[in-house]
Amino acid sequence: MLIGVAALGVFNTVLLTTRERRRDLGVLKSIGMTPRQVTVMTVTSVAAQGAAGALIAIPAGMLAHRLVVDNVGIVEFPEAMKDVFQPSHLAGVVIAVLGALAPARSAARLTVAAVLHGE
Image (cartoon, rainbow, N blue to C red):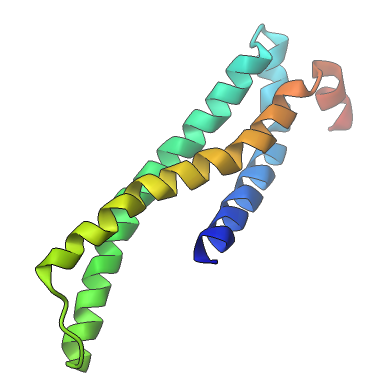
């Protein structure tokens, strides 16, 4: 369920960001950018943001967990549990990329005239 909520949050954020960048994408398409290049550019930027988020959030979450558990004193945090969090790095990036595909494709399908006329 947590993955579904995260995916919806990423999808919503990417959709809004892509809509805000419609004019910029229209200008790029007017100077010769192909729909595939628009899609790749959008997905790549979201993947980079997802990777950066994973690199920052996972260690910060582990640190926060240690602080909370040490202060509560009920549950120990064994060193072996660090391996459990490793797939989360990849999962965050995959969720970001999958959430970016639909908005990126819809932005790539827009014509220059439609984008600039809608502004």
